[in-house]
Image 1: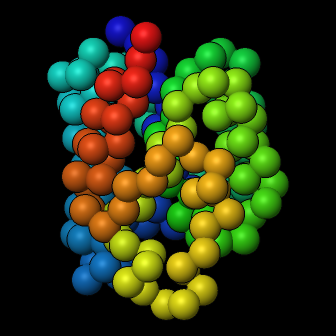
Image 2: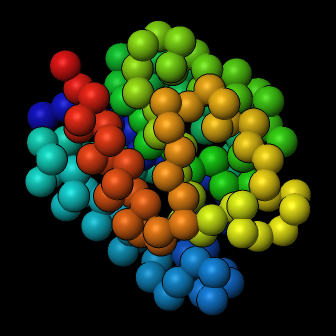
Length: 147
């Protein structure tokens, strides 16, 4: 099985209690279970992680480059302003690896400040607005691009 890092940024550890009208009632544990199941169906070993720490998220992207691992990345609020995260993501795709930016909600349909992604321009692709299914679609995109 090919290992894929599924990385989640700030506040995603609060799924199920944070703005359930936007993000749903399911928890990060529920998301992790779903992602691992979908990954296994696609021949992927999904290593699901979450952090509220920008430096830790950047370190995980460096790990992906060094270990030659594809990435599904929900940068959450870091999406909109973190050029450090953008530069780390660019290293992933610059190394010829797949990086799919993913969002539970559709940032383009939300507040104006959410409509800019620092990560999107360096990602292989972006999937947004389908709730947990966004991750399923992202994993399918990763699997389709494996050698």
